Length: 101
Image (tube, rainbow, N blue to C red; front, side):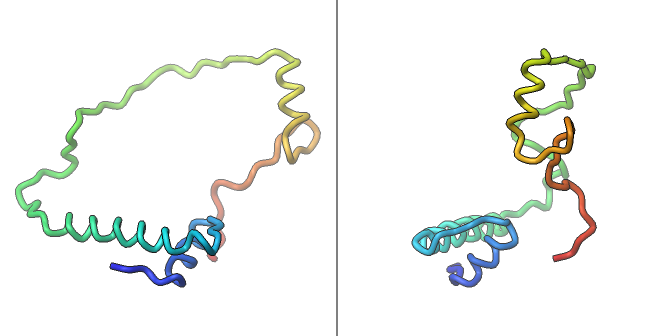
């Protein structure tokens, strides 16, 4: 499947990516290739495959949280070099929002 330039630009907007004009064609091909692969996977019969089967065994690894205090000079330099701050608090972009865009 071939993506249009408008499709690629919409996906980039939703992903908050800046794509240069000369990159659009490559993204069209790459996204089309990915979607083609997904379509190929849809042809597989998965009727007898149990849910949550993985090719590689995996297990959750839990560990105790350890507080590791940095020295005062490192802390001071990190605060000084941070782009947005309020006093000694660092301002970061919100992770969770209730906005709809």
